[in-house]
Amino acid sequence: MRDKLQILAVDDNSISLATIEQELKGVYEVIPINSGIRALQYLQKEKPDLILLDYQMALMDGIETLKAIRKMEDCREIPVIMITSNQEKETVLEGSKLGIYDYVLKPFNTQDLHERIDRVFKGK
Image 1 (tube, one colour):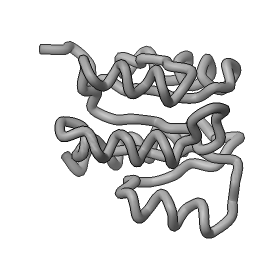
Image 2 (image 1 turned 180 degrees about the horizontal axis):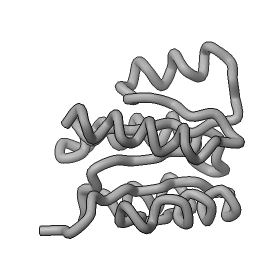
Image 3 (image 1 turned 120 degrees about the vertical axis):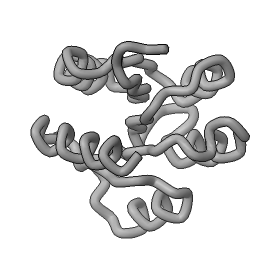
C-alpha cells in the first residue's frame, strides 16, 4: 500500500511537468511522464489515483491518449483532469464526453490546481 495518493502527470512540456511535480510532490506521489505513449505503457503496469493530462502534445495528443486510457479495462475509472491552454468549448466538450473529471487552464494557478485535485479525492 502506498503512503501517498499517486498522480500521473502527463505533459510533453518539460517546464509544465516540472512545475506540476514541484508543486504537488510534498502532498502526493507524482509520476511525471512526457508523452501519451509513455503514459499508456506506464498504465499497463501501474494504476495511479489520478491522471493530470495535457491536451496539446506531440505524436499523441491528450484526447487520443484519453481514448486509449478509457479502452483499458483497469483504467476506465481513473479520474482525469485535463490541462490545456486551449479555451475553445469543443476542447472541453470532447474531454467531457470521454469522462474527464475537470480541466485546468494553462498557465495554471497552483492553488486552483490543488483545489481541483482535492475535489477529486474528496469525491472518492
